[in-house]
Length: 227
Image 1 (tube, helix red, strand yellow):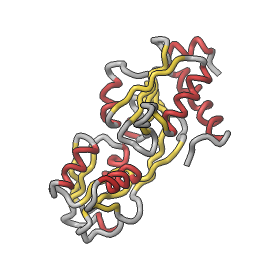
Image 2 (tube, helix red, strand yellow):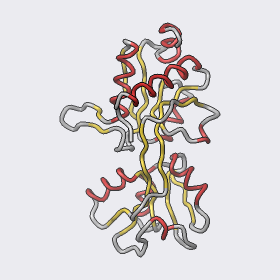
Image 3 (tube, helix red, strand yellow):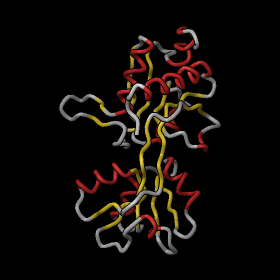
Image 4 (cartoon, helix red, strand yellow):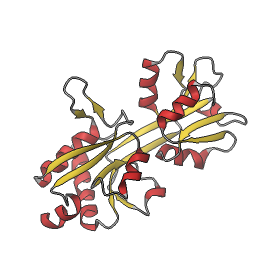
């Protein structure tokens, strides 16, 4: 295992581990409205990582995975909680998955689309955030439907609300929460993707990559967050 000083040079060059979390992924991180504290698997693992290295932690909030990826070039974060999609492997190294989330489709209550299998048909328009890992998987699956790329998950939902598409792709838990707050919509039956979630570091961080692989394996084997 790398020496602590080597690790901290890569994983906390400012003296603090800056951990990027995706606030649009409700399955992984949530903001407690009373305390203002971030909770959920991503936050829990980040806290455990900081404790393991006896280092301070800053949870850096982003509105989407796209925002996290865009911020990488600006050196805004040291580790990021994102999906290890193959399209990202040229820029980042990933730990083993610490959990898995599912993706499905949101439609209006009046839609004839009842399940995931009904969506990929000719003429159906699917809105999906262009840099989301589930969208990358959807691109490899769709054969008949029309895939409409949006800047982020919120704009994909806006397209459905304004009837510019027939279905919106998204993480199942986030879509379910949207339905709870917005009557008139429902999540179809089934899922089209299971998206693993991991900790990413820049590819140049070879010591951090080795450490995080061991850290997540030990963390998950001890019964910590994992699906």
